[in-house]
Length: 284
Image 1 (cartoon, rainbow, N blue to C red):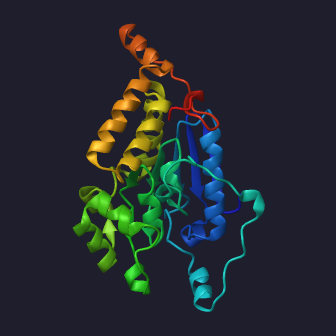
Image 2: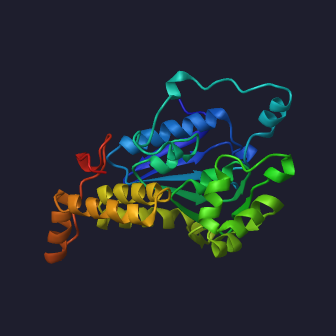
Image 3: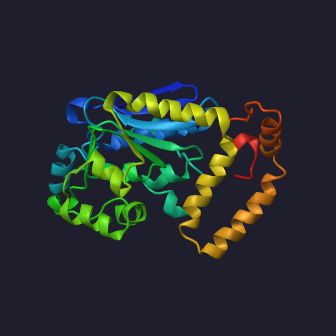
């Protein structure tokens, strides 16, 4: 069913690869629908602890397909993706801010990691920013491009980038649309870490494997929700919510398992997330 992405599950990782390498993986409505469908599948798959988004070939994503943009100037639109690709990943009870066209990645119950293998431009920048973690190849670069196309800060980038980088760095990237190399992206906080190109995907896999072996998927799902929801709340509200969730966690099997594993000096055996509820519970 997928024409513009590749999808693979290799426990504990689901990898979604943008697969239009001859077009630098330029984004289309079809690609958006396929990514959304694959993310929904990965979220429901108990084998998957984290979802990795990357690109085929030498680029991550060049932004919107230029033929599509040219069509928009003439009032033309892409054909709608097939109904079979319709999917609704993520928590329906998250605030609408995190259920948008691409910000839905922030409502997905599992970590979404961008493995940035090459250049990122235009609308791909806010898509990468909506991922939970960003690891980059030393060949990666970032360019918002909007101001050079007569466009605005698209797809929530005016909210996402200031929270990642601070207002001054965000406005620099948006106003100038200059190319930011991987090392600078790491310095200003746009990516978590830069790796030698050939080490990027092996590193990301080892990162997820370590999480899968030592961390509670249910705890991660709850913490992800806390971080994003609390960006919209006061410190007082966040502290009170955390206290209530802490008391609830004391009654969950993962807390008992985590303590037992520590006392018995063994690796924990936490339940995976499958279907809608983390670990089969409704508390996340």
